[in-house]
Length: 537
Image 1 (cartoon, one colour):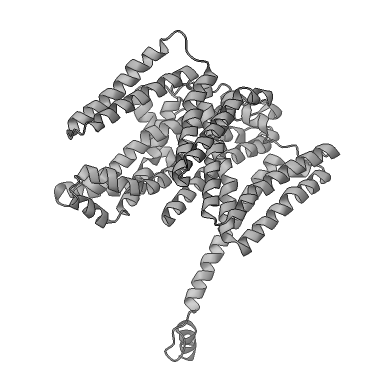
Image 2: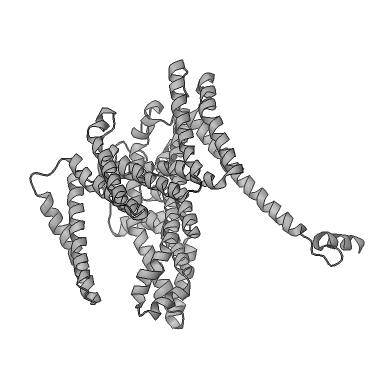
């Protein structure tokens, strides 16, 4: 009895007082679990990075130089932001990560233009869609309220533009040079959008005009300056559009708000450290690490020789497969979520069927990925008759895999929109569709995008479904259409894991894993930043 009384006082306190011991033990256990998970992940990343980069193969002078110019200043800045200015720390990490993520995004766009669509096809597609948008806008200006008529006009305008006007433009014998095409269809619209935003936030036509001229001139300079620096005009323009413009807007936003502006110095500390360190080791003649992960690895095809092995065709295949996944899984998943949350009845026989469907969707989200590979093999190859190992089959199969995740994430985002907002819209006389389109979806879209990006992060790393649908183990030629044979990064990594050569099985494989991890972490970080930003707004 005495021991039971003592234990009771330890957990619940003495003399009727409430003890905080249980809460502290629970908090400590959660902290320990979190720290253990982070430690294990950090150790894993260290092992992979060590095999891929091999820092131990560098000269001691090289390590000391970069330690003094890069590592020490970076750690010092991180400690300062953490202890003295957390707001500047958030700005610092965003200002460093934003250009990296945007550069990866620009690289994906470059792959599309390099392997999937030519400059003239892009010009024809852009002009056609702009013409269709103009017709739809003109019809909306008439103020007609016939929903079916509006739908017919929209579908008809898009169909005529894509299958009529686009073909007519491509049949023109003389079209502008590709540099002029990209300058007019990429740089000019991006410069105009940037200038329009700055004009509105700064309330100054002069600032908007200067922004347009500066960004357009920078993009146009790529026609001459790019080749002189060893950079193609398209690459230069994409960096201008996808990196320089958004980073400029972010810097302007931070500077205008006036909070955490010292964090903008963090990218300069890191970039300056890299530049100073590179100049120092080049002058002093220190040899760097014998890294497997270099520019040659990212731009070369697979090879049985470790020194010549690369991941570029598999990287292109993963990008094209992601496009198929987005175009197939995203509209279907979001549409299903909208119906289940906004239109499906909750009572009666149909309501019970809807409940059964939702339960099965939740169960399908936990089905092993190899089962979806068997499903893709049975449906798309055996039944439909598509060719094995093509981009479109891989995209559809992985799209089925993430479809339940997209539906569940979209349902949660739509469900999170307060009912009072819907009722207010109905009170203003809006219809059900107008409420969903103009009220619910805009508020739910950040959550939908976040869930979709996280699902795509899983999709790009799946291997088992690709094995089942016959994705090539080794591809030395990048796919140039959605119906071409393809390889993907996880499939290529799996192939390297079975090689007898230890350099392929460890060094080259680690470089491939690190490349895949960078893409995954960039996508997940983007989703987290989007979620946090819209949660604060």
